[in-house]
Image (tube, rainbow, N blue to C red; front, side):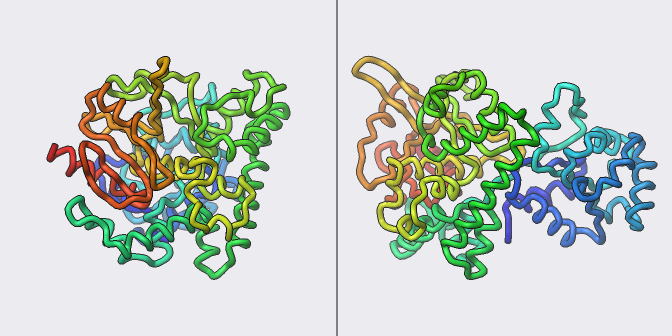
Length: 444
């Protein structure tokens, strides 16, 4: 299964300024698979250590001397670790904080060795108060579930992908390709981008079986709560996680989760779920200037789930029903907003920590709200998600007028076109957003 992060791994491999790499992201999104594939394909040999199932390797890192560490690893593994030829892959590295600390010294004293670390709950180790991050000695890459382009590739639709790569405002998207892409998009809304679910479908499993795998993955996440939350917080984590599919794209209120619980307790649990990568916040920004995070209101936010397939599963609708024509209107368009948020994250550079923003204007008789605000080069651009085929764009025009934006972006089922400062981008084409906007803004 081809993943876009592979290109970043290749770039890291040949970079003369390369540092030890940590790949970050939620559990079960394919980190181990893609790194091991990279190791097998690009290196003469590799040593993969999983600290969860091979705890005997932890003692190798009782020293911070890279030479001694490598010697000890060779004692246990019976492998020769050769710089430039061997990839050292430290999986579930959060189980051995000393291994993370040692990465600094590998950079300083053994920079020619390729080292990658990954872990499903790595964020909690990195954020512990007593943990000393080796700043400036480690690189990060963020990984996510499959985006729609990766999904199409996994299903073998290379011709459709190539057509999207070549499509522009002048040529548009072929009408047959447009219909096919919307059909596959509906399937993606049901399956989502978790590799195990997509692989099951590729192997011929039914949609019902795919939903059973989604249920298994969700239970895996729930079982993890005990690893990073106190007994009291576990209950709050579970409550928020269960309610999350119904809260997508809404202004988050703790009372909507549990009116009887203290907001402070729910806030702690929410932050734990965000750290685990299971939820992603969308913060309100004033959007007056760059960077967008300089003027955010942390008290006003929405949430997304890690994967659109889990949102569908949380609605408890039959998968076959979800494939019907009104799929994009499910939950008053929340499903479409979840998908767009996921795709926008996937368009951001993998070395950036994921971040999403929205905008609202609360004036008497003059309220407006924009689903997403993005930075494109030096421009601040508004994005409005229109799940149906009709709908006014009053908020989009209000933002353009107020902030003097170069263009506004409407994302919907409609074909690609540009008209009167409004770029209409099909839902299936968000992966090409930056390229299309480049062309439009340059010609404005």
